[in-house]
Image 1 (cartoon, helix red, strand yellow):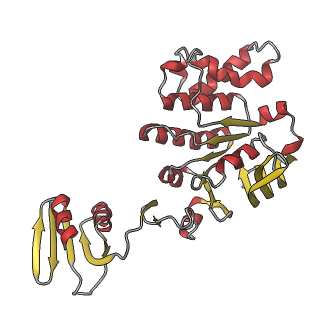
Image 2: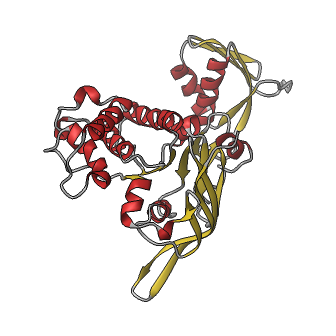
Image 3: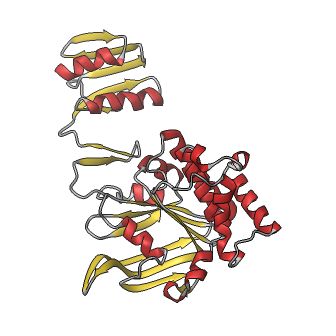
Length: 336
């Protein structure tokens, strides 16, 4: 069953104007964002992620091409219509310490409450439902100033939910959060996309969580090309490799992460008791300029056998050394 298309761009050009001059950041962008999907926008600093998000939110106009929201040109939406169609969550810390959690989330009902901003019973029920969905209902009476950064972001997501928008855009919502809060927010967005049927697009530098939780990726490369597709398709086709241009980092498809390029790695025969040990042995080897080969029959290569983290054996040139920790092994690898 094909999911409903919420946002579509065809040959879209993004950028900005200063006086009579026009600066194009990206051109010829083609993409589709569907209901029920969490998509992560990845790329280095300065490649135009925020510019694209502002264009998709209607905050700044497209410089060319077509941009449609629910089958209708975004440029034809009034400000009020955009406020009920697009929820926007930015990186900046919210300066609303004097408001309660409920009051901040309720601001999302402004497009519906009229001039005086009075909340009806139905409005209050929607606010309560959104806070419950993001796990902030128990703190509804707390002041925003009392919340952690992660909790603030959850309230801002609730505010976007209260707007009842089919599209939610987030510009690096986890930028200043600790590890636990980043994981919680990303997992929350993935769950809300599915349960609420929202199309959610977020920019992030958290590659690991994006690969784990995003249904799709938009990879914005420095050469102006943006690759779009399912996470696994892009990883396995090599799409992640050129994401940071000529930067001295490489993408490791096995680990799903980037690491500093480590020159010419030297091979080592590797025998590990299980997959977990194998992963962390490879981690230790690569840091010291080696890589492990599990099925090599080349007896001239050093042999590293790992039976447990406290039982490691290094054999080379007719000599064998046993170690009781990775710390001991690392000393030898650094000087071998």
